[in-house]
Image 1 (cartoon, rainbow, N blue to C red):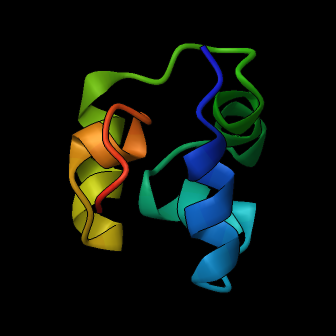
Image 2: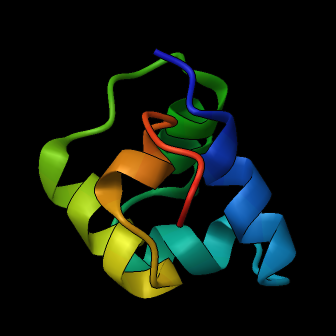
Image 3: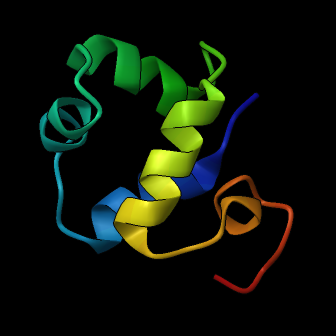
Length: 67
């Protein structure tokens, strides 16, 4: 599943894929695959990214339009 907001939030916060991958303690290529929808993102990573960006998990997953 592709979550456009992963990339949008990262860019809006002026972060690189490497920085976010390091925050999640994973390889950049793995994170890149999450952004592009080539791999399913694990729940723990969704929760951690939502906390990092200060948004709800529903917003991050595209289920709601309000952060």
